[in-house]
Image (cartoon, rainbow, N blue to C red; front, side):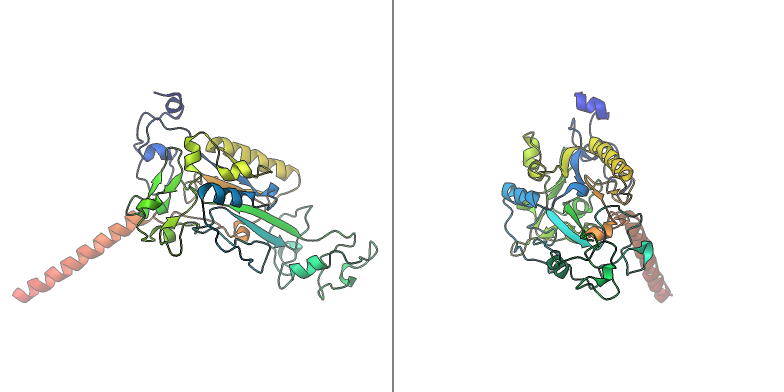
Length: 352
């Protein structure tokens, strides 16, 4: 038995393989890997992401992912819009009308005077506000609403001391490499498989383009490439892992917002980081996807967020879409048996 196997108690394929939901402490063992290394993954700390998109570029360069348009959304400076078959890493830019410092508890950024007393974006034009950042501001203590260009009845984007009342949330999104990966469960060709590192990879050369994996993903990550039809997504740089290298995106990240390593170690590090932010007066900080008891059994790529998951385009309570398959098949079998019994009864009545 190897040292790794001794640490994990793994002497062969796990007897808990084939689970569609619930606790799964050894995903690689459940997939049939013997004497496998520790499960690895990503911890993305969005609180230190600077939106440089170095991770996007590194991912494309290493994996030879084609360019996919680079079109501005019209809502922010984001020019890649979201994850797709040709964007395996995506850095979201989210502008909010909320002070950068002194974070307030509660994250409901509703209308003026709404929950928490915070302002919502509404029809506020962030580009126009940016254009006024060099404007002359009144003396300290003057009413903020008296500033030139301030929306009627609202606080100006410039505070009396000249400080911008906007904050940017930036987050590098990626495939979550779920513990219970519905995309893998529904793949009819075996194109998707679980690696010895616990990650989920698509073998595009045997993908038949059926597309079953696309609606199966609770995060909307996996996608089919236009003009190709095959499914593509992040591989967590499986080829680099096999050579003892870290994934290209984590290697390129200048602030260590994207951290790679053994998943258990990353979870401990993330919990400590959240505690640090709470102590520093950032009560909105929370982890997303790290809980092994959540609807997908925990993610291999999880995040530290500064707002609700929906703000970042993430589902608040993801659940593996294949969780109810056994009960669905049981109900279908009962319905089929009832129908067969009814047909048999009809024929029996005719004979009489």
